[in-house]
Image 1 (tube, rainbow, N blue to C red):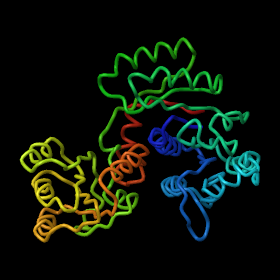
Image 2 (tube, rainbow, N blue to C red):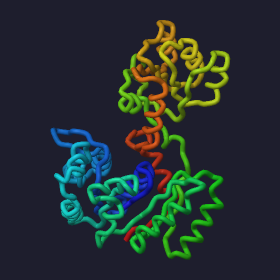
Image 3 (cartoon, one colour):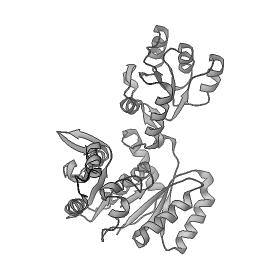
Image 4 (cartoon, rainbow, N blue to C red):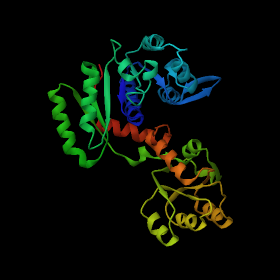
Length: 341
């Protein structure tokens, strides 16, 4: 099981690890006990991450067989009301079926150590399965790195077979070396550190539109462009140009009535304009966006709630955008040394 305190850290390890094992000639299975990103396909609830892994690993099993439970509000209510029993035994059976004929089955953690607990399916509970081993991915945070790893060691004990650090900046080298020394004394393997990369934290304009419920009103041909930074335009136009020039590959969030800010943003390297308040832009702004190739997204929400939603989206970044896949594999193969037997 690949587990972490963040879903993004699991994905950046799980897919390239599976591809590496397949390239070595191993028969690789995949299973996700708890699906937290439901989508309906052919009338059945499946998990988006499962669909992504199925496609990219060429898995033959139906998507619904690769996930123990796809969590919905109705299921949570049933569990709270005592109308549903823990599906743990069913999940164990489904996982065992997937594992048949495989050299190794990779199990995706839920993305946080508490997720799935109400169903008896937390990562700690899944780790109790006798055959399960645990690979823990610690997202680099200077103040919590050692605490994350110590917590994993306390929770998983001898099940913990190794550690990978994700999003490590160059300045983290000294702390990574301290971690390696400590892990060596604990007889826990250190498989490497994946450096921070802005591309992997980016999100496509299309994905933003889907998550925010926004309408793209121009340059729909550019919706696959990736946004790496977000800036709010709420100042006077003189300050705006200087402010917007600080970042490239950005989305600018501003009110639909701020034509001055919108035009200023379009004079800098902007990937998308997000217009809040349900107000359509003026004709000159629309014409300039068409000319510069910048999609504009129209939202009914206000700027404050839009920012909160964006923070939620970027806090659970996925690797589903195809533009990121080759980068993920490249970083994993270059920085992670792991041998699975």
